[in-house]
Amino acid sequence: MQEKYNFDKVTDRRGTNALKVDALQARYGSADLIPLWVADLDFETPPFIVSALRERVEHPIYGYTQLPKGYWPLIAKWMEERHGWAVKPEWMCYIPGIVTGIGLAVNLFTEKGDKVIIQPPVYHPFRIVPEANGRTVAANPLRLAGDRYEMDFAQLEHLIDDKCRLLILANPHNPGGVMWSRETLLRLADVCARRSVLVVADEIHADMALFGSRHVPFASVSEAAAQGSITFGAPSKTFNIAGLVSSFAVVPNASIRARFYSWLRANELSEPTIPAAVATAAAYEHGREWLRQMLAYVEENVGYVEQFLAEHIPTIRAMKPQASFLLWLDCRGLGLGHAALVNLFVGKAKLALNDGEMFGSGGEGFMRLNVGTPRCVLEQAMAQLKKACDELPPPPASS
Image (cartoon, rainbow, N blue to C red):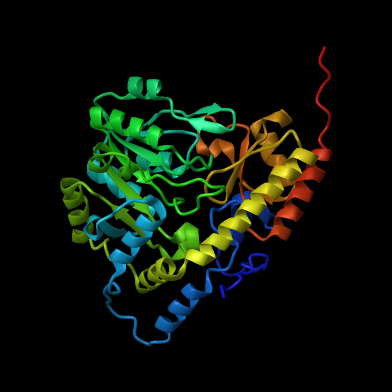
């Protein structure tokens, strides 16, 4: 009989140095907010991971360590079962975080003054990391077609010049929740291969396909994609272990792999800590049923928010995600400027969300809502948002 996991349980994270709650005062100017911003879950880390960590911690020596036997084959098996991508263990290497990995790739495969392409609105470190490392960010903005984003290939072809070296891809897309189709990824691979642009694919949300969607790894769509890309993945979002830093890279191309991994090893960045290795192995060995139940719960949370907004706040529209626990809210119907929109959510509704402008061009008028939380928390948040919206002054009458 399968264990029934309880995602309705509310766990108080205050006082644990959790960024999501203990940084509210510093980030939002108030600690009295419902935290629905940072992309981690409010569900307890699965018991099989906690048990594996506890068993290892009970041994009182935490010295130098090696990876558990069968570690990379275990991850490869998970990726083939879940995503249909036959990954060879030798293609993989530990990295100390995906944003860190992006920074390492930017520094190793581009020079100062080179251009890095991003597709806004998109996860903000895609812009911050290259800029902070002296690279120029070139924007290939996504186009919003109804409830889905599309890539603008004509603009991309025009954008690429001899200074463009690298493109950072969010697959699935954050914050829009889009599962890019095989056709879209094939087309992107073709453009980048023809123009000698390396693709760095952030696929950290890959395991969280919703509503019958299926993740397509970028490197799996063609030989050109495989030979011109670095893929980053992790169990961290999926199993709520982001604080353990359990990321990895997958590089099919032998020359790119040798250049990247030899640099990682030379700088001792290629070995996970004890907790990261233990938690990752436990997640991929025992996590299938927990993940199935968690995703079903998240789907119900998405449905709850969609229905609530449609019935009570129709000026805010939820873009139904194909992946992950992040819900992109189109608030443009409220007719508010950026400062007024943020004040509505933070100052009036007492909710901490990520505002759309931080994700770049095209994010104006949107807010990102984390629905990976117990239902009662969402119910309270929606009630507070409704009250705040009900108190908005009516729009000026048209002349």
